[in-house]
Every structure is written in C-alpha cells, then in structure tokens.
Image (tube, one colour):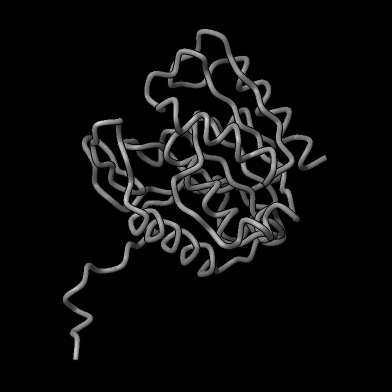
Length: 221
C-alpha cells in the first residue's frame, strides 16, 4: 500500500496573488483574458499591457506557482547538452493547476482567452491542448509548443482556435528547435496569425503590440 503523502503536493495557483482589472461585481457576463507571465517573472509584468488591450474583457494576471529567481515559473527547466528541457510531468502539473484555478472561478466568464509571454505562452498552448474548444483563442508572445504529446491534438486540429504567435528574429532565449517545432505544429492545430519581427530579441516591440491589439480587438468585434 502506498502513501500518497509521499509524493509532492499538487501545484496551486495563488488566488490571492491574482491581479484583476475589475471587481467581482463588474465581472459578471463579461469575457475573461488570462495573462500568463514568463519564466522568473511575476503577475505584474503582463498586467502592464492593460492600457493597450480591449476594454470589454476582464483581465486576470496570474502568478506562476514555482518560486524561481526573482519571480516565479510555471515549470522548471533542466539544462542538457542541447539546451534546456522540461519534464512532461512538470508541464502537466502546471496545466492542471491552471485548469483548477479556471474551474474554481466564482464569477463564470462568458468566454476565456489566453495571453502568455515565453513560458507563459507555452502554457497558453498547453491549455488549448488540454481542453479543445473551451478557450476562445491564445495570444503567444515569444512562446513555443512544449515537447509533450497530447491525445487531444486531433480534436484541437478540428476546432482550430485562433492563435496569434509573435516572435523576434534575434530572440536568443527560445532555442531554435522549439521555434521549428512550434512553426511546424501551429498551422495544423490552429487558425494561425504569425508575425515575425526583424531584430527583436526576447521581448515585445511596439509593432508586435500593435498587431496583438488588432488580433484581440477582432476577437471582440
């Protein structure tokens, strides 16, 4: 007989750390955009985009559950001979934590969109894969598709949700194999809007912000 307490506790998204753009009373019946920051960052990072985003949806900026450096991460990275890799179990645990937070929302949104940067962008794609058809779209900034295989990918390809994927040609953080995998995977599993920005590193430029804003406004037109 095994003792379940021997395993690590499940990851939990701290509801007390969420930054909301509207009070609970003002969320009813409105769409929601879930903001997912990158590795080693924090919930205040993407919340700074709020002035540029559509006014109709409510914004919820989440803090990743794993303390990492000056901030937090959704899943750990392991260094290998070819770069950084991620354990499938760690990615799955982060996905489960996000789904649990969304399922527990006291005020049900009319729809849920996803916006993530870097590792947060990877999590946005994992949420699409976990529950095809549940999420209205994903906006992925300097993000990537993880190494995980997912039996739901066939169903996701049939749904083909809108996905914005923006990246810079000078991004030295996301490894080339991850970019290649994402570029091969997204067209067959989404209705893709891809934008590539010459000379942009691992960040968001004004041009990308303009394209992102246009993509999001089309979702709420």
